[in-house]
Amino acid sequence: RYVAEAQRLFEPVIVSIAETNAPKEAQLYAISVAIAVKEVELALWHYINAFVSNQQKYLNSADAFLLEGQSELTRAGLLAP
Image: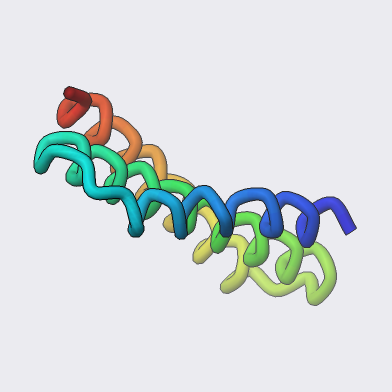
């Protein structure tokens, strides 16, 4: 329930970012943030699958997505206008 609610809250933000006619520097920052959010969301779903199925492959994938999301968020910070 909480995951679905978080997803509903993030989707309009990502759509707004895509529809905004911002300066190029801000667009790159916004895209990077959107990618980071999606990677963290994927990590969350993989953690849930790991918990439910007790399969290590989901835990490994979740860790990888989370690290990529963190890396992308760091990149976004460097792109911040």
